[in-house]
Image (cartoon, rainbow, N blue to C red):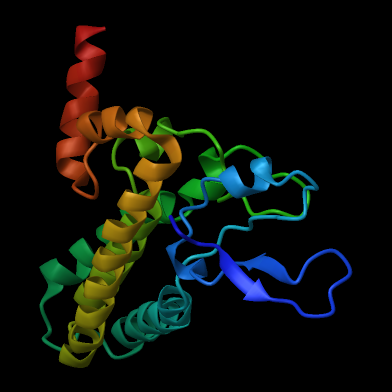
Length: 208
């Protein structure tokens, strides 16, 4: 992934040049550098892009404010059916959002549960490949229907775009990390379309 490059290290007792992660943003968390380093001087810790991390507080703020607004003042448009549908979507989104803590193996000491080195395809990961992102989207959609406020919808649009771009980049990284196993997983399980994912899951269980 061309993450490492040479950096001048004048005065260093071992070498005048050191490998440095100049392309850290391109890291696919495949852990190859960690396993190949002869002195085990590299430790890879999973972390999403900074833009994604910055958007998370905004997501929670949007969800909380929209739900409180809908409860206290009622839906802005006064439509009762979308209001109740919003609550259903909100409840459905919760298990998707908490998927990593529910289905990922226990992390190594000092590492995140997202630092998994095996493909997880059970539970919600058997429905969509990125259930936590889907959970965020469902929670936002549900909260928007509860509040029915145009401002909530406007704020949500760029977040949806950011999430989609993050998922596309993550897909490329996961192909590098897991190779053909992930490509086979991609053929079995859709990226974010949970309706198609449920249909495929039911169909596969029916055949079994």
